[in-house]
Length: 264
Image (tube, rainbow, N blue to C red; front, side, top):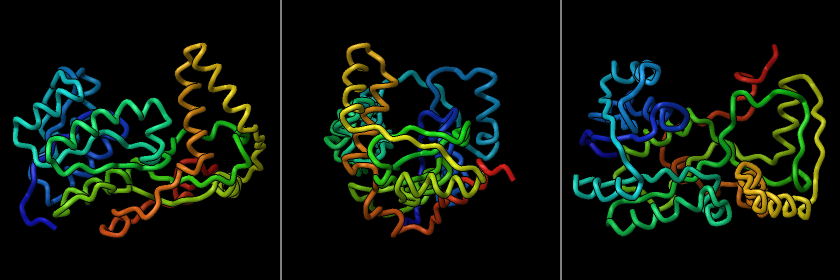
């Protein structure tokens, strides 16, 4: 662990993953300053969201940037480490999910810089609002494996990673790994209802994907490509580095379900 306090900048901090990472970093005593980068002068609502972080010492800086331009600017500023916004279900999935594939160019450009560049797969990040009915429709037979990591745990893993002397090429920010069917059974136990789950074939999945490309339906394209990645065994983060080298204790699926889905 490094004894020198470090300075960090985090982009995309107004909600979701970026906000979770920034929240964990401002609480890390090994961090000197955290600069919060926003795309433009923040509105009053955004300022309200970021105000607690600013009160803890974070610096708010509006910028107008594009990812590849960020890398050039960071090189000029003397940045030593760069963690691209990869955060996909696994490194293998980047090559078949178009939404993630667009990030490969950024990652390759960053590698050319000579920085310490990690790949940061996080698995499936669950929503707190997903339980809207005890039913589901899923491809295959539901026995594919999924690594499950909460936003808060991703923030904790990143905060712990910045104190490490060196970053490996694969960080692996992983919570619990279960099959889809195991997750369904645990959800049923927590909610106290039986889920109605139907399954559809690989052929139907590919047909839906082809139709989404024809109709330029980006949401369906993304979902069908994600399901394809899961069915091809790309949904599990194997041998996650940060799970072995940090003290982060990730949230289990049951803990998450009891917190956000339980009707008790």
